[in-house]
Length: 277
Length: 70
Image (tube, rainbow over all chains, first blue to last red; front, side, top):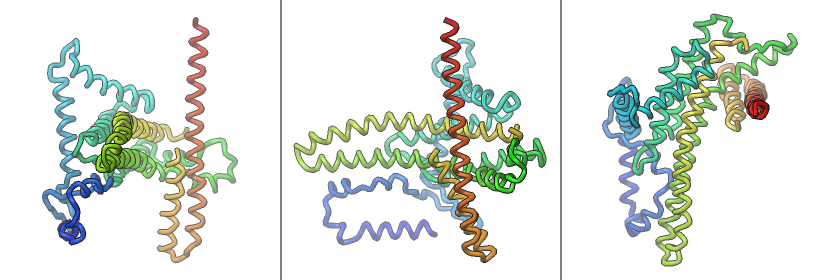
């Protein structure tokens, strides 16, 4: 119902008499950089009072998961001894994460490899899917990244308690500290532990959001300058060149942020396995 | 790294406000937990900086080892 109300409001704004006088060109020029993040419900659903509509965000998650499944299953279908290009890229992704888990969690971390690999591939896929024009970046919404970070946080905490019992609490009391200082150190360490899901989710979300806003702003400059005249069209080359640069940078950020998310999850897992350090 | 610092203060703020709302002690817990949160943020940054320095030193050590081999 909330979504329907929002839709009605949008229609009302569209029919606003002040807007009606504008030409189409002007409307394009004022397209805001935040419109790309708007959630549009395609099929409205409600379960137990919660709005669980199938939105453009859900659609792009389904597309990403389908594409990743196709990429991974298709790549290993032939299972050749000498891998082709497709199989080599799948193996490269596998080995990259396998090495990351081995180096940062240790040998006993092998059992958590499927989780880290899924996490990495999903974030990387979502980030890269966001680079396709007219698509939607699911990772540019804090609720999506926070859900991912919360799964890591709760999972790591449960693993820590399952492996070490109450010994996991040693994580909050570093060794080599004078006894009276524990009154101060333990609360600080506990708080520091709770900042993990927040910094993990905000880092990914803020990078994707800022990058996509910046690209839209510079794309807006091209259109605004193009509307001025010949001189403006000549000057529009500058934001256009910068946007090409930004596109490359955003693809780098897409890989980098997926990597950072995965490696931090590995480090948190390592802490859960060896709390005494 | 900057996010780690802000996240500490943010967590302190959330815990402080909720404890105050629950126990009706405004603003006692808010002030306490803001300071604790700030300390936790600084702790995060120090840990991160230590890790970066260790990695940088490892890198230098690795280069020195390779130089020795030659």
